[in-house]
Length: 257
Image (cartoon, rainbow, N blue to C red):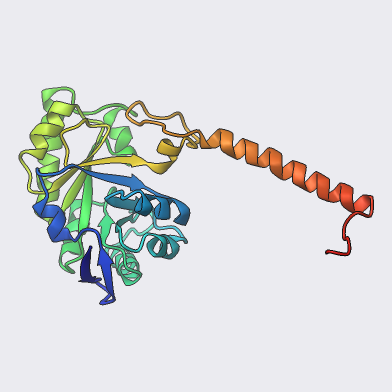
């Protein structure tokens, strides 16, 4: 663990700093999980997951507290914060609560370069970017031909020039990912792009098996939380039914209650 001052000047400990991550490029493959609840964040930290990422929902402060020593990135949706002023203000709000890095998944390059002026760490997104799928002809793997692979490579280099420390590369061929990773100073994050990235990334909802959509081919399910949740609901109904029955039969409240 490293002693650090967060960008909000609070003293804390982290498993990795930006400097550590950059120095590890090409030396060690890391793990990253997208978490959506404080419990998932706490589990990720206990499991020694290297990096976590989360959406900018109302529970970010709790996620930070539950995984207080794990490097945390938070995404900011471009559609909700559509000006440089709004997006920078939101970045500052997240830094204020101890977030370590910003995910600029749907931002334009100009906005990313703007964030660099404040020395705030951020990562980009290339390859198949879901919000841009209409330009790709729908939801599909991207980069299977020379023209597409060249576009991805050029996009990654443009992201690098904005000052990003990392880039998530989604659903591109493994060999393309390998070439990109070997030709950028940024850490590369693979989601559905094979083994040759610096960081492997999956969503907690896929790992735990409770996603509301069909599990992507590139993901791996390790538990069946849907079945567990169904069992919990059955037990809830049984418990409530027993409670009502006790009230009707005058068994509740008893002297103990």
